[in-house]
Amino acid sequence: MSGSITILPIRPLALVRKIAFASVLGVALITANTALAQDAQTLAGSITMEGRGTVAVTPDMAVITTNVVSTAKTAAEALSENSASISKVIDAIKGAGIEAKDIQTRGFGIYPRYERVASGSDQQPGIAGYEVRNGVEVNVRDLAKLGGLLTLVVESGANSVDGIRFEVSDPADKLDEARKKAVDAARHKAEIFASAAGAELGTIISISETGTQMPQPLMMRAGSMMAASAEAVPVETGEQTIGANVTIRWALK
Image 1 (cartoon, rainbow, N blue to C red):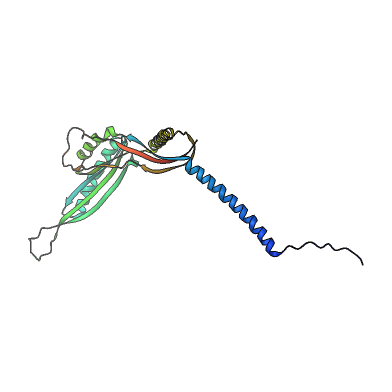
Image 2 (cartoon, one colour):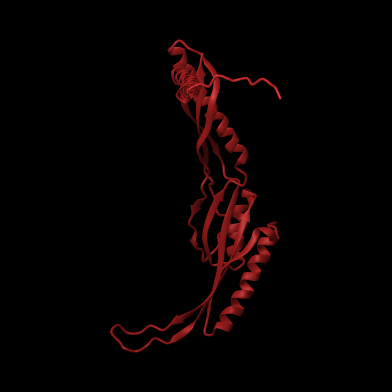
């Protein structure tokens, strides 16, 4: 049998390793140099500015908590009296045009009332009677009704109003308006700095919201209301602020 055999040259192992290492090193250096060049260009040719936008809003909704407090010798008597009174209050609130979904029971409780004991006496105080407290939290979506409603609940039997809380029912649109103002403010400052440096703003590299300010409920303490005025209770809602902060980075050209 006859044939031919081709013998390929065998490279030394050390040479093969050197060639492979050189190839890998070359690719790594090219990649690193490209990244460094890009980073250097970005750092040298960019500007970062913060902006804040605010919008003043007037609360369009109020939340009031009104209570009936009743006392009697027995818990049953106090409860019966209280239930009748709070029912009248709820009926009056509904009669004023407040929907049932905006009325919620709050703070129901029955508490013993103890006799007074002389100072230093070892005698245990006995129960002199009972107090029943029951209230309703009311969402008032038409603020024009608020003053008259406060007077009405007292006239119908409520003898305590814990507080009035003013709120903005839907702040989302106003927050978006504040965000737009924040972007405009950041761009305005960036344009001034860029112009002073003899450059112009390019494309946006990054943009992020760094904070928002939402309206907080404003509490107005009303305290006990034992007698009603013939006129509606005067109410001032004031203003609240919705704000947004943004940080934007531009490339310069």
